[in-house]
Image (spheres, helix red, strand yellow):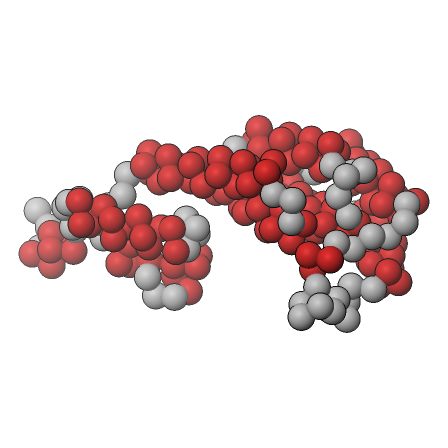
Length: 189
């Protein structure tokens, strides 16, 4: 039988505790790493949230980000929603999410600006790394996406402007250099 300290460390899930646990989970988007970094993981762990409930919360967040992807007209917000969709896909271990992310990029190659697509391709490659899902076909697809970007005019949505000005790293020349660098990287790796 455990000591009083061990028994006292466990919190029975009341409505208040449920709300508190959900608030911590939401604040860190389900990332234990971020909770540990901020010293909140031990507190969260004491709530004894069932993995099945965490999975429901993550699935809900993943679905919300996907809906945001489909409705957002602001490219900055779209890139953020794609990043968060992939984050939740990774935490869920949702391999179907890889296919959805790839299809999303493919479907938007002619619609979105160059910089948003570069960000999404980068996030997609991070997702593939998380799942150790790289193969020859995936690498070829990434190179194809990047080459398509290089062949068209470089565009950057005004949604990325800060105080009416693009950040220094968002010039046509620097974006083109970034695409070339990524193509070289994927041809070698």
